[in-house]
Length: 346
Image 1: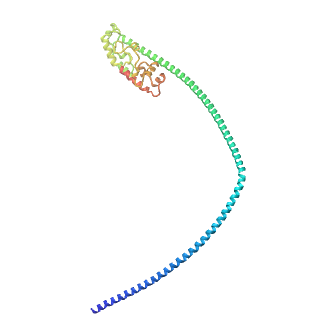
Image 2: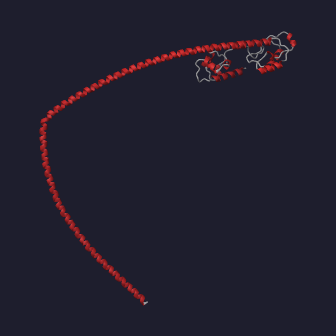
Image 3: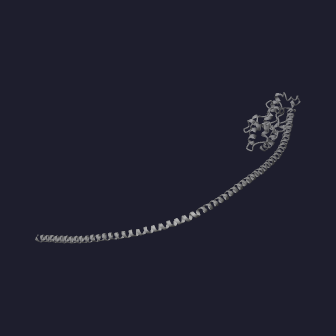
């Protein structure tokens, strides 16, 4: 225990010695700092004094220099004033003559400028008149050329229309001739059928002939049924009052053999004869879609009086025969509608 206490006491003593040494070192450092601070203060005071001295010396030098500059400026100003006075005196002597010369020069320049402006105006006026005359001449020439072209186009159009009218007239005449020929053929066939219907009927079996007629597609006189042979000696009935037996046999024959749609045996009151058909009024074409009153009149003028006339024609035929049909008109639809009207009438 004694040894530990001794050691602690020794440590304390050493710590106290170290603290004392540090305190002495700090005091010494503080003394040195104070000494350095005094040196710095002395140096600052010396610097301030030197700077103040230099400033006083520099200020004096600056004041002296400024005074010298003022003196030089005054001397220069006096020289300049003398030079200006001399220049004024010289200028006053020559200003009047120079002013007169400048005035004369300005007047001359003004006159030349006015002359140039007048020349430019005259040249512009002449150019405008010349260009206006050229434009008028050009417009006149163009008007003449346009008038010539219009006259030429009218002449060509007139000749073309004459040619078209001649071609149309020729086509119409040809169509009318063909239509007359077809009517003549129809009338001849009608007369032949009428004579055949009015002639005495022999006792022949119609079945083979009917079959051959159906195979060939053309009607023959053997395709109609005939009455027994004992009726051949009887008086032939007139077309206006056929017997009941003949009407029955004709109806059976018409059901067995093909017949043209436009030819009917006399005595059939359901279909008019050709003379009655010719006596009927023309069909109303306005029921056809796309046909107005004007086009209907043109169709009648071209020779188309009934729906059948239109149904048997071709679109090219109708366009060639009817003048003034627009290109967008659907002529084929007219033909289809006319065919339906004909079938509906039958």
